[in-house]
Image 1 (cartoon, rainbow, N blue to C red):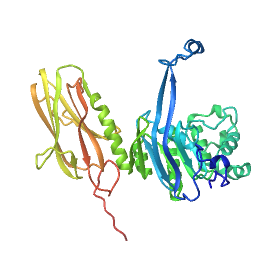
Image 2 (cartoon, rainbow, N blue to C red):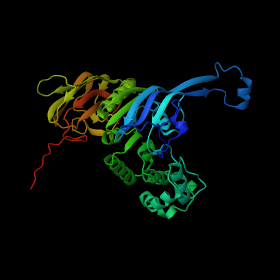
Image 3 (cartoon, rainbow, N blue to C red):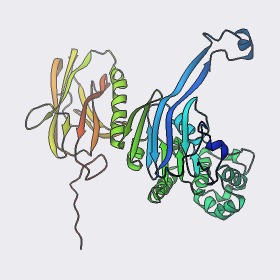
Image 4 (cartoon, helix red, strand yellow):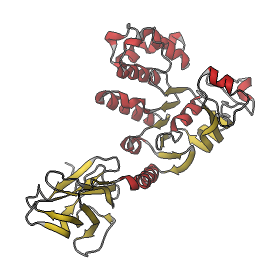
Length: 418
């Protein structure tokens, strides 16, 4: 027997081929089950009605099949928080909408159980000509609440959203942040068993984002199931206990969150490898970059917190440079600067004219990076053009400090009790 969201047997849902059926009651640990899911969209090149009439019966060359999802199979157990990650166009939002029943799969099945709440698109489920108050009741009814239940939760919804002054204003006059505030407040107060969240939370301001994160964490403690799409590695790493990486509609990695983020970074690194060198053609060039252990003189790709290393940057110039600058920096995979300096800042720019090759060595004693992967960039130029030649990912280093801390800095912290 198969049960619908209200716990009542639904004949249509009981049919074995029903594409948005619900899981059997005996499958108590599974909230979402996806089997061989594919979603095909048709891309038409004949845009106007006139063009379609002209090309009628001759679809070849005017229509193209695009598979947003290909043979996706996975199960999501109750109480888990799953992050869907991948590059733009990888199929994350399509998969989330398919789980939510917004779109139907071309082939395969999606089964789920429990009450669903979804934040998929800005303004989804809202009518622009209705007030915020009216849209609370409209959206709550779409999510399965009765009028009496919405009455009971209304004050809490408005208080959580923080837009009391505008609750009787038409939502077409709302900012994007106000949309998100009200939509999230409704979603988390309908008592969902499964919460689907797309990137919409990035629209809200920082205090509201923290408020949302706290609410999601409380959901986790209550054993609710959460599936979220985010381009923020920090958010996924902080909230999720499982990561699913998609590429071109296929599951490329499914497992521990750290492994999924590492696979994503490796994919980005491979794609950007040819785009990380900037050369303005001024005759300056970086010949090589190497991170060397200060004690063993060996090139390293992994370090421990507190290890002393040296960055050797060999540069060359076709013309005589009376003044020149060599710089370096350490960045996270998302481009956040952790540390940076150059020979000018260190007080040694242009001490001697340069022509031909020369190696500049930056000593980095007691380097304490937090756990994770980092990119080292290098630049070379004149004081007027410090980055005439720049390599954004000149070297990669992995900091391995175990699981004793989080963040980009590793500090030898300890504690006592009294």
